[in-house]
Amino acid sequence: MSFIEEFKKIKGSGAYILLAVLLLLPICIQGVLGLGPIVTDYKYYVTTFGLFCRLFLSVAIGLLISLSFYNEYRRKGYLNVILNGHSFANLIINKMLFFYTFILVYLLTALFISLGFQLFDGSNIGLYYKELLISFSFLFITSILLINIHMFLCMFFNQHTMISLIISVLCSFLNVFIVPTQLWIMFPWSYPTRILYFASLNTLDFVTILLITICSFALILYYNSINVRST
Image: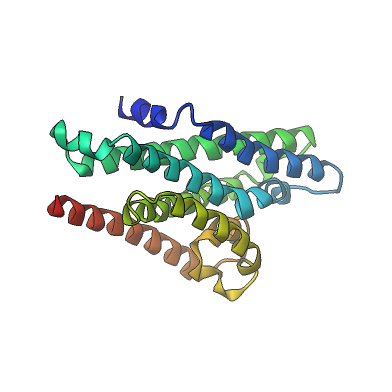
């Protein structure tokens, strides 16, 4: 029920239509463009996901989380939590699980559309399914990291949740310039794009991404515990 409740909190705001556009537009455009040139094997996956990961995924995550927290504050959701005797921790956990599940389905939808273009083009997915699994798994992990970052921003800025959305948009544009540089490891919004080229990453890069993701969990839990003690 908590998933359905979180889903309804931004239903009717037009957010889900925007999220669909942010997914379908880049994936389909790149998928069609990939049909022309000779793009084979894993490179087709990179082609269809490239623009989506570089510019649109961060914005989608920022939009989803910012609107969810915005409606939470606007409808006095935090006050209702207190009046109903529930804890802030439960509210945050419910939101985390909803965001993780939604983005997983979101990414799977993008993957299936990409695979559809690849099959239409005659690609033999069986030849590079291991690369797809590795890349997609770490793409989901990096998405979790971005979710945690934007959740923290919404919690930190309190009722000014749109700051999180603005940051996601700005970081998406900065991502274009940072991804090719050595500074990408210091810029989490570049991780989804770099993961597409995971073969060029070393073990330390993967470990760093995992550690930062774990730290982002700890940061949210710690900040949430501070809020609980202060109420």
